[in-house]
Amino acid sequence: MLETPAKKATEPHIYELYGQLEKNNPHQPRLSGSEAETIRRVLRSLQKHERERLQKGFNRLNFTVGVLNTLLIAWVFGAHPEHFWLLFLVESSVLLPLKIYQDYTARPMCQVFYYLDYCWVMNFLIILAFYALMLCGDRVDINLRHHMFTAVLGVGCGSLLGATGILPFAAVVFHDSSVMTSLFVHLVPPMLLHTFLWNPSLILQTWPTVFHFHQEEVRMWPGEGWTAPFVLPWNALGTVVGDTMIIYWVWFVLYVLWMLTFGLELTRTKKDPSGKIVAKPKYDTVYYSLARDSFLLAAGNLWGRKVEVTKRMIVDGEYEYRDFALYMTIHACLTFASTVVLPYACQTSRYVHSAMIWGLVSLCVFRGASRYVYWVTSSSSRALTREYRDILEYNHNAKKKL
Image (cartoon, rainbow, N blue to C red):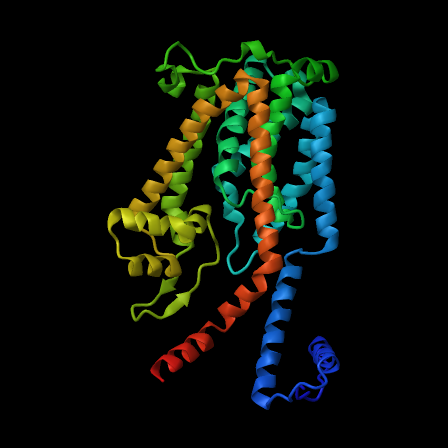
């Protein structure tokens, strides 16, 4: 049996496990002190892993609220599409402040600058547009309404729809409000546009003082033929591609200037001439979060940069302007492609639009299911492997020498 040490008030759960092991295995040989200490360390590590999961909201209440809220969104979308825009505003008023607080208090690096990213800025603009129509709709000019709708259509059914399919963190994780809010700002706007594109008469009848649009007036791009989408944005005012890309280029210029002036330096570890760390970074950015995940390694392979150099850059938050230039070039190309192709497909057919939403919902549910399977089956063993990697590698190398 286990050699049970004297109980400590700070670790009651560990010794309950000892008691259970002794009761269930009365005839097992007693372990040595070092073996018992090893088991105690493993149990402490497991409890630490459990606490971390609970601190991140993995509990019954959050899971229940997440499921019920998802069902509410699905029900209003299907049963009352004329009120879906109102639910969007209510959900945004609750989820976004909570998400901002979570990111502001995030450690080791504050994530508040994530909200300068394109997807977040566009969501804030969409929310402001709906509030403007709701509170002072009678004073909003008809031409301005038209530009607002075409831009929202291009963003919601374009870049946000495409990003939902590309970004791996867009997943249905019911208990995690942070993940669900990130999913909300990417997936719900395309659903919102679905209600306006395919239920316009119902919305106009229900909210005549708020909305005055007509779907037949919406043009994707000026001109005809395959070259039509490639006109300059300022020559395509009033079209989906033109209005959307003008907004994008305004954001693009401001974001690049901010990153070159402040953003790239925010994530850099400050060191003195001897290499000693003077100050660690306090703020994170979307670019650096994606860069350290996989982008910098891929960019390094493209430039022929040594893997060791790239890994050091990731650890120290270092940067090269060519990496950032490549990132923003890819961002611009994907945004333009999604703005040209996806809104056109959504506007062409209700069935195509619905199929896209259903496909994205299925993909996000699959991603969420993969996370839950990992947490239930593999997360504890992976956590223990990470914590005791040095010991395991030392023993493995020692056996090799023997």
